[in-house]
Image (cartoon, rainbow, N blue to C red; front, top):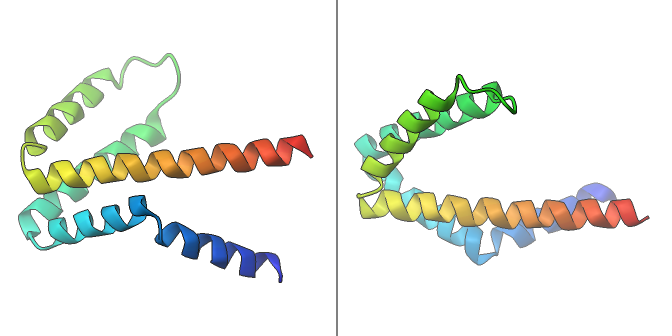
Length: 109
């Protein structure tokens, strides 16, 4: 079995996790409402822009971060959106833990 096959098996395993399934279900609910979908996509875009611009010790993004947090807080009162953001956090935490395990295993060799 080559590396590509192992990666395919790994991604298939990820798709069977509770975190991935919940994220997909929550995303499907958001996608059923075009207004919510648009707002969530705007928030995700803003998050990505902030992440791309962020440099440690830089304070000029603070106002953008506070504004984004307020937007997230306001839209999270919608149960479907709250579920989606929670599912994203859980999925990202799972992926982060996997990355840590992989990184530690590589460093040990």
